[in-house]
Amino acid sequence: MLDVEKIKRDIPLFQNYPNLIYLDSCATTLKPRYVLDKMDEYYQEYGVNIHRGVYELSYRATEEYDKARKKIAKFINASFEEVIFTRGTTNSLNMIAQTYGMANINLNDEIITSELEHHSSLLPWMQVAKKKGAILKYIPLNDEGRITVENFKKVLTDKTKVVAITYVSNTMGYLTPIREIIELAHKQGAVVIVDAAQAAPHFKIDVCELDCDFLAFSAHKMLGPTGIGILYGKKSLLDKMDPEEYGGDMNNDVFHDNVIVKETPYKFEAGTPAIAEAIGLGAAIDLLEKIGFDNIRQHEKELHKYALEKLSSVSGITIYNKTADIGIINFNIDGVHPHDASTFFDQANIALRAGHHCAQLVTKWLKCNGTLRACLYIYNSKQDIDIFVKTVQEVVEFFRQFSEV
Image 1 (spheres, rainbow, N blue to C red):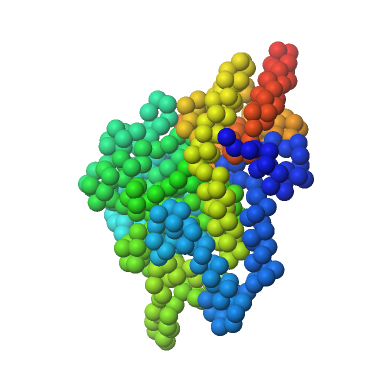
Image 2: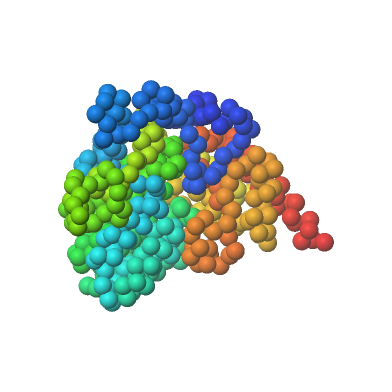
């Protein structure tokens, strides 16, 4: 069992807002003091640039930055060279579309995606398809709104060149049968790009076991800082790709008419990187591994089950994903726009998300204007759930009086 109170004591935001019930961790997680301290340590003790300095402080900064990359590589079972620092999942997925996609997709090639995708996973490939004359195909969702292997087979052909797919839906909380899909895609010679932004905070990822070609996630969704993310790519693919950006620290030599770029991963990291943020992500991984992903999963499952049981006694709400695989409750107050309802929750010091969650095709599939999304994580407790459910009941009763007039 997790010691939720201890975890909350280590998060400064909860000290400033002791009555806050934070249910928006799918958007961003709160930052523990240990992560903030490691970033402050960089700025206060050795806050200089990396790689290019030949003095002691720069050596230390470079060493700590490289340690963070090694830590992340170990975290996902990748090699050091296969881990690229980016600005976040969005940047990572766009980078692959603009580099690998634009170089390898041709007229009438097929790109497979799904209606469950976050816009960051969908829109870059939509643009590649338009520019290259390729065909964008969607995996049909089953009645529950899930991606299935059977439905994936319906759209997979020998023309499929790319599969861009979510590991865990940020709206429905459904786990994609990713291993089976990757295996099938590879048999057709397709490359698979995995959006793991909602997977990395909740369970261990092994890119070798998955055999994915590219995978992306963000630090800020797993106790780390904003502004930094990871792009994993198989070295055999990365070595063949051109950089998306050119500038400082990504080249070995420059001539009047040519440039010799560095090896992977450095050729993809032009300019001064987010050094403190990389170190902060490394610290966040330390914390998650100390807590243990088995413990995280068990805590979430228990909270999720408890929340659904409590909500089952509340009439006047619709829950769209009762069988979610992670702690996401996607719901609406019947007859009430989610933005109106979210204001009521805010007045009760409950932070949750309202709208389409950067996944508008899901909202269209659900045939609604948007939804309320409550996300459970390691700093949530059954007491939080009790207050949340009580507030849901109050919201229902508040708006019901207007519908009865």
